[in-house]
Image 1 (tube, rainbow, N blue to C red):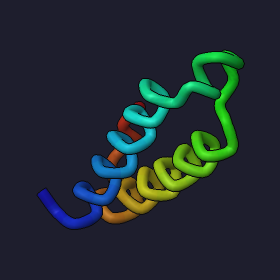
Image 2 (cartoon, rainbow, N blue to C red):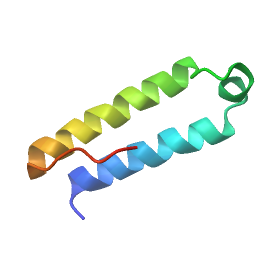
Image 3 (cartoon, helix red, strand yellow):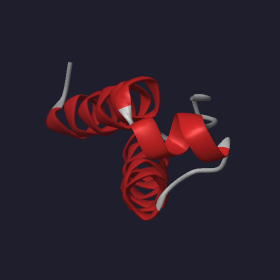
Length: 60
C-alpha cells in the first residue's frame, strides 16, 4: 500500500471513529466542528489518492 493510500485509509478511519465516539455528534445527530474538519481531511486525502492512481474515488 502506498503512502497516499495509507493517508486516505488513516483519514477515513479517524473520521469514522470520531463519528462513533463523539457525544456531540450523537446527541445532535449532526456532525460537530471536529467531524467536519476530519471529513475535509478525508476528502482531501481521497482526491490525492485519485490523482496519484488515476482511479475513481473510494467511498467512505
